[in-house]
Length: 115
Image (cartoon, rainbow, N blue to C red; front, side, top):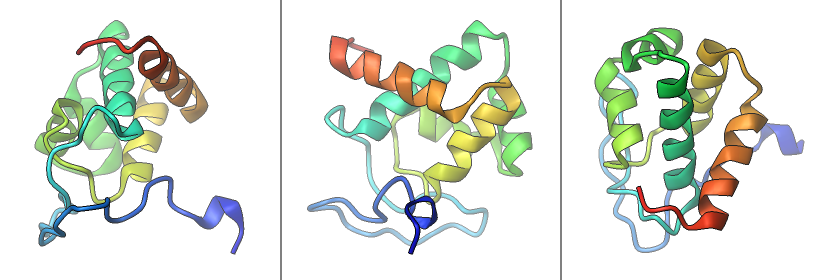
């Protein structure tokens, strides 16, 4: 298996309970803790989206999901079922490289910014 074939995030986290997936692709896990990188990735994605004047519905349309999926991701309410898809959706809609979102998330994490 090539590195690029592996998902960016594990499907479960230590101590988490696996939830039933919703038909629209929904969510499998409970709230994201701020010690997980996906929490900071969600914050970075939200910041860039707002800076560029885009709405959650634009991101949702790009990934063919409901706006509530994007909202739950940004609010840190649940782990998305396919975080790779969401990150690529932000990158496509915001016209940036997914690496830029990761770099922003890493900066937020390193600075320990409260959200």
